[in-house]
Amino acid sequence: MPAPPASVAAGADGDHNGDHDDGDEDGGQKHGAQTLSPAASSPPNVAVSMRWRRVSPEGTRAAVEALELPAAVFKTCPWEPRELVQMGLRQWLRCAGAALRDDQVIGMPSHAVDEAWHGLILCTARYADFCDAAYGRFLHHRPDGTGGGDPMAAQLARTEIAWRLVAQPGETCVLWHLDARVGAAWS
Image: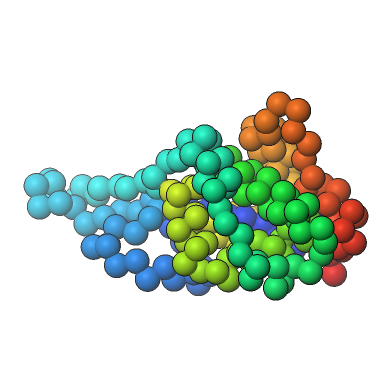
């Protein structure tokens, strides 16, 4: 199987690498771990650190379940049945939540789900709001698969681990065989 060309970067350092400018002007306190200027009451040479807002696995699951996927999501994803692709996307988004909680980078096992994710990302306001609700931070896409600097095989192994963390009892993962079922292939 050729290595899929996409990964999700946990990005706990707040580095956007030019992928997304959220334009969030909130007094310099953007989402992500960062060093802020010392407060007036702080001793000299002391930095104050802010971490991403943590979202529980239950909170991530609820946000993923509540996410409305507009038809625009499927402009980049022509494969049918849509219900199967939607299931794969929702499973992927739950896996991403587990990865982000552990500041890990995971690989994308499905071309069809990757394309649906692209369509969702293009709905920028909806995607940003979803990321805030589901993860407490923005979920970045690294289409070249370089997130974290690890080889894709290692990223995909972490995707399997993430699935084991988020799967409900008796739930079947569709991510690994979805492309064969819908006729999608990595180019």
